[in-house]
Picture 1 (cartoon, rainbow, N blue to C red):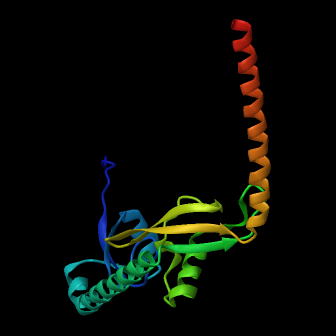
Picture 2: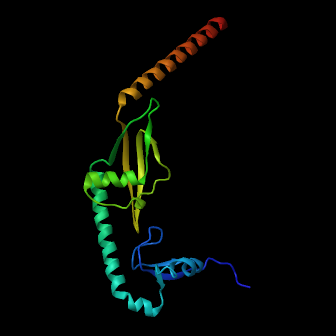
Length: 191
């Protein structure tokens, strides 16, 4: 009987896959995934000595390309940080909730519009979509490069939110005043 362990095998990717890695990168995968998906679809080859020798030049060139890409991303991220992060503007309802949620694709689109640099959306790692105005941190991950991007979401129609905030404040103020009066009456009775 075979033992069920976390065994992996090494393969060389012949095409980029956002979940595994980039073209001509050696990655470790489960044998069943390699056997049933990657190898039959010619998405990868086993990283045997022969294949490593065969693809050595392409793998080295791809590695240099990934390093160059990482340096470019680092420059971009520093530029974003220098400008105080990314700023989204969207229509909101009275509670400050956005009508259109913001996800990774929107972040990538804003980066392209603002900095004229194409970045794949899967490098931005949002746990959940942004749904309201406020300040957020969006993690960026590319290989060993990890960075937190500051994102500010502001209302396109702030007058709606301000009106609602004033109404809520007035309601809270009235409650405080009622509580104060009730406490004053208790103190009078106690005396």
